[in-house]
Length: 115
Figure 1 (cartoon, rainbow, N blue to C red):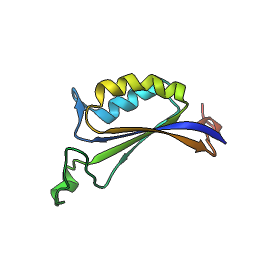
Figure 2: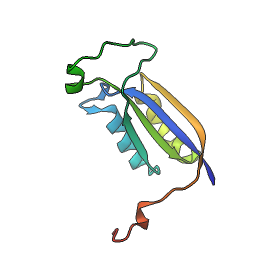
Figure 3: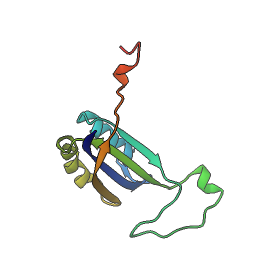
């Protein structure tokens, strides 16, 4: 068992940096910094400090503005490489870091036929 850090970032999917969604910018930066991995999940609904719950409509399924959750698990050393970037670009949302116990980490290079 290994103790690592989980960095969780909650943002809206409506946030863009120039013409690209912020979550894609964050994923690309995490990948470039060689972090172990990241997952983006679209949340069903939510609210934050500056928002309130809205009535859901049929249009929400066509063009939703929904909260996103980005989770990154790695050593503190690697996560700290991403923090200045997050400080600069995540202007709305919440960022959480906590200890996690990793029970198993199965890497893709264990798959037969992987080049």
